[in-house]
Length: 240
Image 1 (cartoon, rainbow, N blue to C red):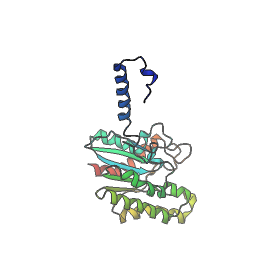
Image 2: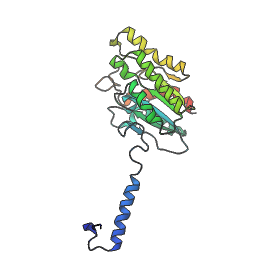
Image 3: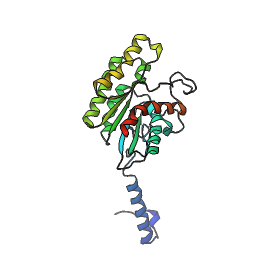
Image 4: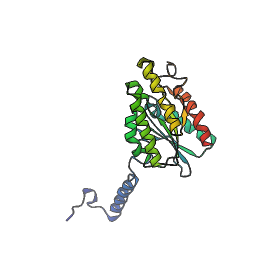
């Protein structure tokens, strides 16, 4: 035998009906959970930068803190968000989804890509990973293997999707042998896998204190404008 909640004691049927209706509205409004419309493997790392429109094609930016816009007041100031603004200004039917995870390595990306890309349609993927590998001195051969794994998984999930490789460079203090081996990973994989290539994401930004935050690694909002331009030179013609 159920006991009535105190709220209902002495109340009429109309109050009870209104209360039950309110509960049902709350349940249905929360039914999709935090995963819907997000861009990353969790609510903090995955966030769409454009309005979801059914008729739009989707560009998945899959990367690290550069894609996530680490340190910016608004993640929309990061280069994927800037690209969405350009797309919208041109009236192009594309939606940007930025799946950036701060601190992500190529190994982490290889373990995350299926979860992110497997639950949504993807027409273009922009692969921006490897910077943290370079900073941590991870073997370029290991980085190459992990990036190839991401590419292979994407091709399995979305065979018709176009892929863009974003090139990165290791800091010079890692030594010439390391930096040379690291640099060629990205163009080599782009050629092997028939991907478009952004030669160096941080071109014109790396090493400039005006365009980087206090850590000297992550671009400011102004720096991200240049990153967006570097990517747009390759991505833009693909969207026309």
